[in-house]
Length: 299
Image 1 (tube, rainbow, N blue to C red):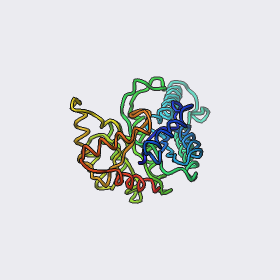
Image 2: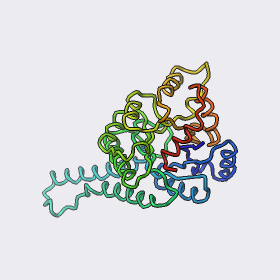
Image 3: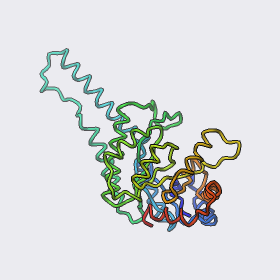
Image 4: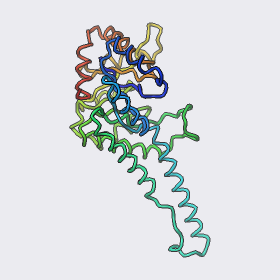
């Protein structure tokens, strides 16, 4: 088994990582993909992967973590608006005033993407991501005054598009995050799609949306199924919808993930997900999903 999406490099595993990986191996998890969400966690994913032969890294900037760049853009825009107001109301020659640079935020974005690109050549890096679109309003976040704005969505599109291009340029897999933004996700994919990504791209923690499924089928994109599918007969309607969605995924596009520590606590829990999905589909899926996962990351 391969856990195609975990965050084993996150701080919550500091001090217990050795045991967590041992438990995963004992449960039959042969490889773990440590997925970066920003530059810091991407660098740590590489560091962890260099210390553990069964761990591989993905480097990327999550759409939620685009927010600091959005703040820089808003500050520059506000300062420029103020400066233009001063120009309009005070008899001051335009040439004598130094306006905030409109391209400054763009330079910050380019610098972040450039740093991300510098990480790709490490031999343990097998993917770019997670990247994508996210319009969810997080109540628990490290960012003060977090909100979804048109400016933020546009900036997420920029980061997403650039990371799609990196994956194609360096022949790496692409890990896509989508939350409450199917329309925007597909728009960016359509605009930046490269056939080199076919069979080397995954909709991580895929929402049960037919539009995503149809796009995945037509572009040979894998769909990641996680512990959210683990429900019983007393499950809610939304849980049952997720199960019906899983039944509609072509087996050749199916991979599994824990998204640990978020959806499932540890990579070892992948065995429970595999057993549940196998029972749900009434098929022995272990070998097929293992082959799919190896193909996805070219392992």
